[in-house]
Each structure stands twice: as C-alpha cells, then as structure tokens.
Amino acid sequence: MRRVILTRRWRSRRALRSAQLLDEVVDTQLPLLAAFDEERRRRSADYLAELVALAQDYRYYANGWIDSRELDRRGQRTMNRLARMREESSARLITD
Image (cartoon, rainbow, N blue to C red; front, top):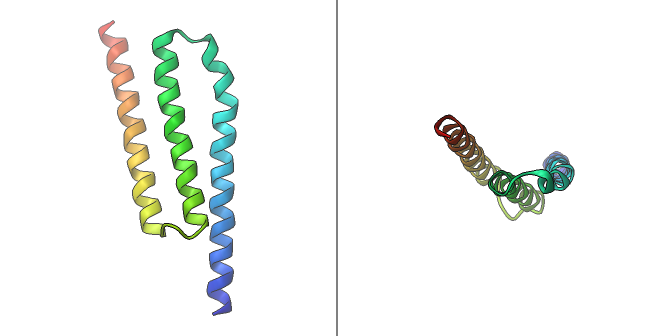
C-alpha cells in the first residue's frame, strides 16, 4: 500500500513538473508573437493554446481527476492537432 502511494506521489510530481515546463515554453514564446504578422501570430497562438491545454491535462492527472490512459489519450490528441497545424502551415507556404 505504501509503495502505491509513493508511486502515485512521484507520478503526480512528475506531471506537475511537465505542466510547469509547458507553461515556461508558452511564457517564453508569448512575447515573440508581437513581432509576427497577423496570420503567423494567429497560428502561433493556436499552437501555444494547445500546449496550455496539455499542461492543464497534466495538472488534472496530478490531482487524480483523470487516469494515465486519459492523459495519454489527450496527449496523443494534442500531438495530432499540432502535427496537423504544422502540415497546414507547410502547405500554405508551398502554395503562396
């Protein structure tokens, strides 16, 4: 029983560290958006919003509100969205 509790605490701390890292990435990138043109600023903001949502999912996991399967599912969904955003962005550059 004690081992389960310790493992859960370790996973919670690790999830919170992951959320904090994502927050730091977003915080360092936000000031850069002002220098972008409107279209690039919008795309970048959408990308950062996905990272913010993923950080929140890590917090939900750390608090025990979702399990590891749900966190994995949400993480995969986020990665798929980010990949689609990159593909759409690349396609626009080629056609422009």
